Length: 241
Image 1 (tube, rainbow, N blue to C red):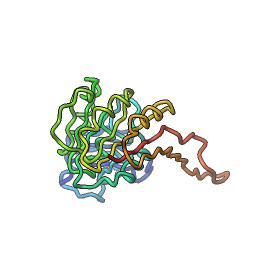
Image 2: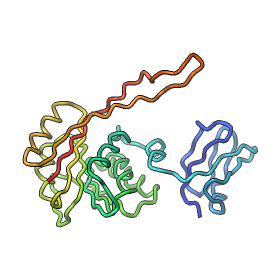
Image 3: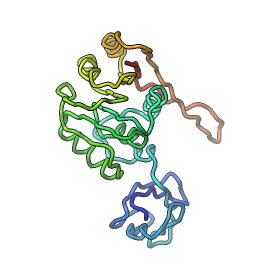
Image 4: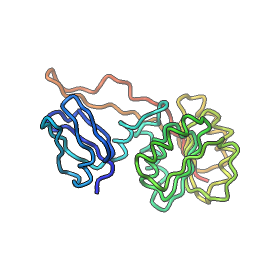
């Protein structure tokens, strides 16, 4: 039974809606009875009252990134991908995440890891993240409203992800929560934060810092070329205990 779905217009695939199978969706091409989704399967179609069709797709993490409500600038998928690739994150891992924001990173990680515990000091951000996680339907992601610098946990974490300002203080606190051989991955928008992170991680091994540059290729009537949008968002520093 469909609970969450991505509706993609068959006439114009850029028109997309992330929905739950309840109530109605009002669009510029008519109204969709979302209750009808419960009787459908992914890959089927649903029509508005005006006869316009939408394909019913199962949402994936990039869809949640694009459509969930945000409280700020989340870590980009390309940066999350670096963390997943270089920590070897897997279905047996327990993850500590700090600087939850809208919960986007926690949701990406929660679709892979066994359990994710995410700390957010801002009450409004924590509320939004909790609502987003609930909308996605993940039961293995816990959003905690609190300061990561005050964490008291007996859990050993395989991976720790940090996206916050006081990076060096956070590293000194969370490194004691790491399982042997565990990883800390920090996201920093500026070089100065990278220097702070690497200094705080100097007792670790395999310290690496990455800048992931991404440029989409544009296809148009005049020709094909890389998009002019700058692909830099920040730096990811990863170290192993």
